Amino acid sequence: MAGQEDPVQREIHQDWANREYINHNEKIEYIEARVTKGETLT
Image 1: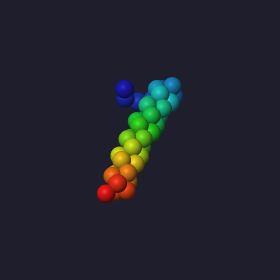
Image 2: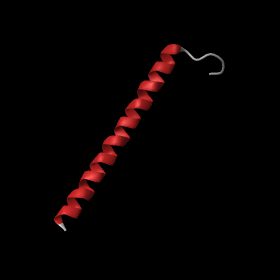
Image 3: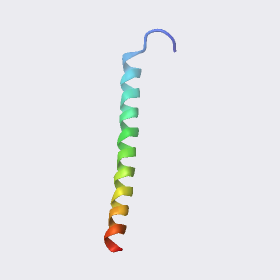
């Protein structure tokens, strides 16, 4: 895949990377919420 990158391929890659980023953020928020609840119950 050397040389110029296909604009469509770049778009797909950016979309995929963006979804991965959102997915990680959701997991982090979920963990933070659980930790916060745990501290409140203690």
